[in-house]
Length: 359
Image (cartoon, rainbow, N blue to C red; front, side, top):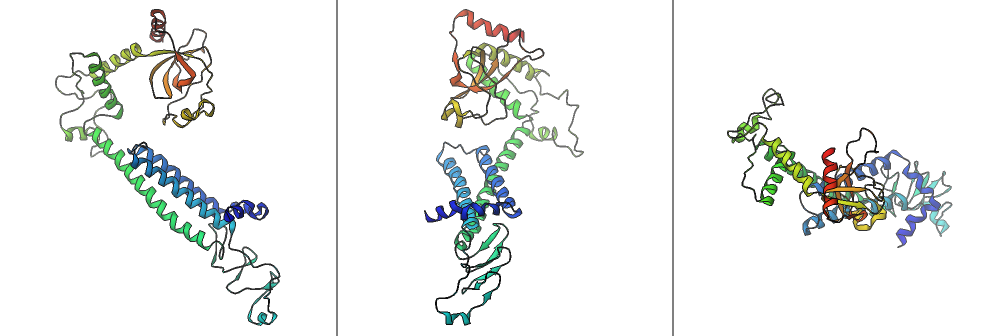
């Protein structure tokens, strides 16, 4: 508690100027970037946060950051401790054993040295560190050393997460390349299986561009010249498949999406903020981790929702004829508690489908 009070008063807040120096700016910038990237990568790395391992991993990352910053600021603002101005030993005869500092106009206590940067005599001075823009000495020796210990340990943890994230991304990338797919095409294939199973159709979707050989699929992307094969418009296909088999499946899925979309009415305005504070804590903390847009909502508007999460929905705003010219559709994420489902009668079910087809 005493340390916390020392950090708060900063000697009448004059110590805040220590932040205006290239050392703390660089150090804090590196800490912020490494911590932020490690936390983002820990989410991208396929270790779900709701599992014990994922939670422990994420909590450890936050713990490293808090402990590193605590000891860093403690070393910077609490400081090393300075010999009081005008100090002299209680026994005046002991002055014969001490050096006299002309700048501080006082005797130098044992183990103290004058710092030209701080313009003070520092108790148990070790050195002046530009990264904390302060001296390391009597009061902050432990904090400075702990900072030097914790920073590499936190970096090792972050580096491990970086490596595992890149490995996971590379593994998934190579897996789809060896099947001659893209990430989007893999998702289309998954949705094709779901569509066939949902409607219990007597059909089988075969991905047309898989050559049946990993080596042939690999050569579709990697060549000795560095230039991919083909012209990017037409592709070799496996036997029994159609050149447009994939696009035909996409059209079926879009038609199915229109059929299965749900119409909602906006009951509460939404500004389009990424993490809205006024829509509830759960909505704030479960905001979709994606670059897909959010859409503004006004009370009374209608939305066709095509997919969703527990507290968020994704869909298209139903536009009327008086809307902005040249804008065909507005779609994105919005909080679930801002809308309510429309009654499922025949008239309300047909209206959004018709409007969507016209667009």
